Structure formats: structure tokens, C-alpha cells
Image (cartoon, rainbow, N blue to C red; front, side):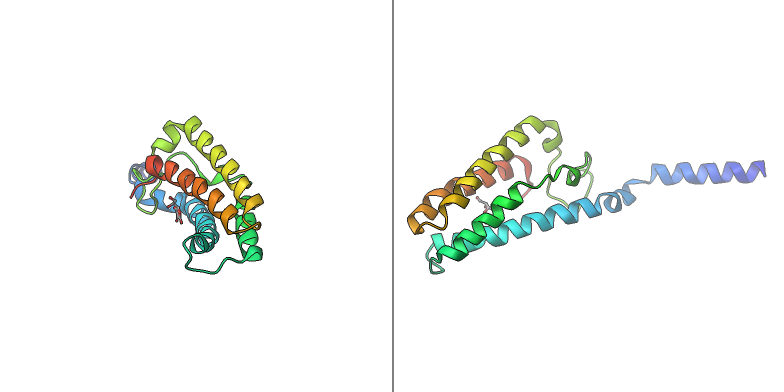
Length: 153
Ligand code: ASC
């Protein structure tokens, strides 16, 4: 019995040592959820981008809906989707860099800047194409500033 207990303990310890293979599974729900979140933002932002670039006719209702969708999404509390260690130095299924957790104050600042830009976009997008164009650029720039620093290519 003692021998069995030892074997069991050793097996458990070995499982802990080889845990990185399991890590992908540990944060899978969080990573899937945050990627889905950004996909919905991208879908809505893409509609606005097509209007801004003249690839799609400007439609005030659609523009307003898309911008307000992004605004509402910007208000989600997504803190639970960013567990420490769910980065691309540990995992293959994410482009999130470890710097996110090392410079968290900067990330939060960038997020709140983005929210402000999105709020303006939501109030302007349905007015006319010129208003949409003016407010669209700063949101794209804000997205990019975080991606440049914290999202792998
Ligand atoms: C998009 C998209 C982004 C941002 C960014 C803006 O449409 O998918 O990540 O705009 O490229 O610069």
C-alpha cells in the first residue's frame, strides 16, 4: 500500500511537471471568448470602414447600429478573460503578448482612450458620412496603438 501511494504521488508530480501541455486547455475558454469578442467588434468596425472607404453606401441606421454595438461592447467587463499567463510565450492559440500583464496600467489607459474614441464614434456615426469619417479614424488609431505593443503579428 505504501508503495502504491508512492507511485501515485510520483505520477501526480510528473503530471505537474509536464503541465504546459495542459495549459492550452486551462485558458481555452477565456481565449476563445476574448477572440470571439474581438471578432464581433471587427465585424461592426468593418461595416463602418467599408462606408468610410466608399466600398459600401453610407446608411445612417446601419452606421449607428454598428457604432453603438461597438460602444456597448466597449462597456463589457472582460477582466475575467485575461488571466495572467494566458499569453503567447506560454500558449500557441493566442497573439496576446506577456507585456499586457507587465504594463497593465498602460493597457488600461489605452483601453479607456479607446472607449472614449468609441463613445464619440457612437454619437457621430448616424449623423452623416463626414461625421462618421471624422470619428472613425481615431478609433482605428486607438485599436492599432494597443495592437502595436501588445498583439503579436
Ligand atoms: C480593424 C481591425 C483592427 C483594427 C486596426 C485599426 O478593422 O481588425 O484590428 O481595424 O487594424 O488600425
